[in-house]
Image (tube, rainbow over all chains, first blue to last red; front, side, top):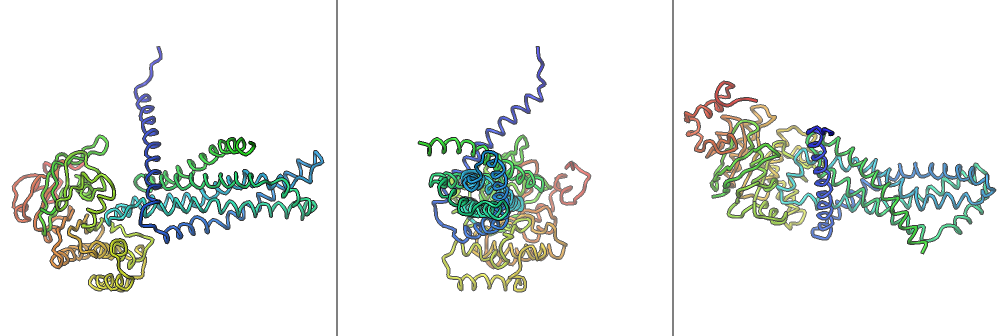
Length: 265
Length: 250
């Protein structure tokens, strides 16, 4: 008979309870945030501040990674397609990869790394320094004041940054494809126009909105439930980045499967 | 009564912090809540504010029961009567000192910006904060932050002022300054005050009544003079600040 040490069973039990409790409380938190979006007062100025912090401050890094992603895609596509004598399709390969997949995913991962960690750390520090309690004591709902502007800013920023990322990525691909690899500019652009359908753009946009939603939800929730002290903020920030990044990649697979089916019909 | 705490218990995990604690805080007076570190004084303050939920019992502020307020909106309407000075002042670090003081005014009064300015500037002058009004909280000392916290707590003329460890982290002079501030504001506004502290005898200077928490309950209650004259060995040890006696230091 196998003897299971009591401590391990207790640990497993604790882990199970914590996981279910955490999952449940994150959904309750999400419902509170969504309810608060539609109740007064509307804090437009705070939303704009967060839009600046999450969106505008991420523009440079997004543009930088996008231009090089597009460039790398052009090199790889040209290399692979040349084996089949199909280098003319380099433009469409770059554009479709960026619009359907790499644009939304890379943008989301980059924004999570840059702004998500900052957002969680800021909320966590506000919590451990009693600023959140101070808001409550002043009869101000922290969900409305702190979470809603960040959540909405994430929801708006990620699709906008994704659109920029795709445009700049294609430009990067064009520069390398046409300028360095010697592809015909006309063919490069014509292939993009003929291969990219509105459905591709729409599916990329849906992904970007969903990733913005995941980013806002996870970053705000982890900041809201941050533990005590520097270690609590450290843990919350790490968990926010890891959880949101993994969630983006997992959800991306399911979204891709669903959207491919949906738009193929 | 200003604040009525009846049979309140609160645990965090397996640790029971407050155990069937009852306390009446009279209207228009300052009550000091004292006790050794870690007995749950700050927890009681957060329970009064509804930031923590009680496990059992009830707390009412001027007849409005905080513990049956089920939604954040209901609690918010009760909290509008309260001003709080937190241990670290808890100023919003994204706002200037002026904006921190103006924050409750902008949130709760429908005033034009020039009226907000007048109201905020009058308390800034009263508390000698003119020179620091445009600085950020992290640019000033803790004693200044506490004065700003006091200004923010007082700006809406609250019926109740809750103060958590007013002189933590301050030297005796600046600690005394905060106590003097509490006393002068109370004389001017007549609020019901709750001052949480383990600083004996400084806190006795400002309080009309004293309640000592020990082992999760109110261990002794009375005027400062009555508490000082108490012969109970626990109270005597606590007042003397001695490590020898029935209170065990863990």
